[in-house]
Structure formats: structure tokens, C-alpha cells
Image (cartoon, rainbow, N blue to C red; front, side, top):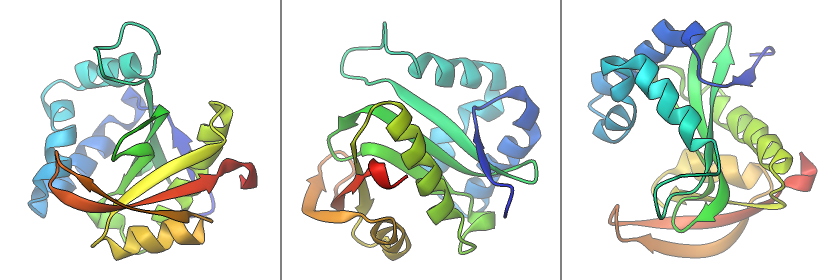
Length: 172
């Protein structure tokens, strides 16, 4: 795990990312499988869409620019992080997930750390990060990353309660 880095989505990691998507299908996690399944149907289209959303102009109304990165360990995609250029209600600045095949190995803390560096590079001083109140692993990761609990919020779209944290990116 010493050679971890964030990479922009690319053709270089096509097979690995397809395996990443299929890992969610194997455990019947429809939320993340549906988020990424378009990559299985049209990989280049998926890459183009991710690239398009990283730009700050001509986005659909209500959407914010979002830079997507893959956490790479030994040429394998083990996680995905989205750094939103502006805070989004109930989603914050940063959202991340780790492949079911690579959980409980410390990748969550590493992906958040690297995402906070990217947030700082985008000019974000206080990153807002949320997690489902039942997601104990994510709660611990955020708190170990100097996350300060701002309170709980209700996400009507997902019908769930979330913890909302602020993290000063100057630490990173």
C-alpha cells in the first residue's frame, strides 16, 4: 500500500475498473453498481462524461463541477473519489467508495487524505464530508482525518440521515 496514488480515470485501467464495478454487482450493491455500470456498456463514453463533469462550464443546471479520481494500488483500482468544486447539500465536497474486494485494509483513510489534498489544490479551505449515520467505518475515517462534526442532516433524496463534517484542508 506504499505506492498509492490518485489517477484520473483512463483507458489504462479499463479492465481493473470493470472489475471494480462488477465487485458491487457481486454483493448486490445496486447504489454503486448503478453509479458505475455505464462504464461496462460504453467505457469511452463513461470516461468522456467524467471528464466533462470536471470542467466548470456548460454543466446542466443544478450540477457542480466534480473531479473524479481512482485510488490505484499496484495498477488496480481500489477506490473512487469525487471532489466537488463547490459544496453540494447532503453530499458535501468529497464522496468516496472503496471496492468491496479491498475494504477494511486502510484504503478509506488513504483515499480521503489524498482527496483533501486535491480539494486544497482546487482552493477549498474547509471540505464538507458526509456519511450515513450507520456507516461506522466512514465515520471513523472522517474523524481520524480531523473531521469536526457539524451535526446531522436528512437527505430526502436518499431517505437517510447523515453526519455532516468539516475538515480543514490546511492539514494536508
